[in-house]
Length: 369
Image (cartoon, helix red, strand yellow):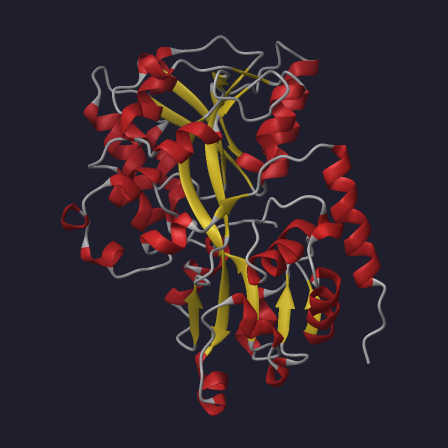
């Protein structure tokens, strides 16, 4: 699923201003997703350290562009545009390790690493093939996370007399031709697996009873599939419900009062943005300071509210230590039971990928009547 932030672009100007007079100051070069670093936090980081460093942030529109930069720097190790840190989605981590685009990081450099919930620590501990491995090295630092959510138009559902709460609601006949789904086999098959009480990471799909029937019925409900062009139809009312990333949809609530979001009670898919160090660049101490800054419990709530994506640190904090705006937002901080039932989409081998690809193609070829 394409993820992007719709936050206002003022951060770009502020971060550029931070670069003024950088000749006499230490510089940390970062490649980030657009609006991935709130300007207020960048300013605080610069103020808190002595000598005051400069964050030289270059922003890209999509995570795949950041991954392509890592590939470019491997081919051209002395490229002038290299960064000290790069934001990468967890989806790309396996490939980055396999292609030797990044280097391991040492968690001992971070005072706040132990505050990361265990599941985020496990997510970034991998072997040299990029697979989860309890004895592997740490390859990235979790920065922020979000989830796949259901967005719906409250004005349309008011007439129906109910509101969606779980994946099973997508199959209700009154929503036929009213919903959009991501153009992604892992997402659509995954949410159907959750409806059936399974994990997003289920393999051997032919052993899941009724999976193909459920997917066929869901396909008949869908108006269109899109991972990057589903917001406008929802805003205009052409669709009544959309499945998408919280990173896309949370900022939209600031201007669209007829929209509401819900995390399905049976659990959902989780994504995480990570900080990685390019293999072609010598590690710098300032990069470790930035990562540790982002992991501070006093910074995590601000990051979550400003970036409209949650710091993993808030999951382990006491509710009374969190702002009311976070406690009252079940998308930023889902109930413990829902979060426990949710899954990171873990890397598959080629056999697993082929299962999903084959079933996806079969279902999409079914003619809807």
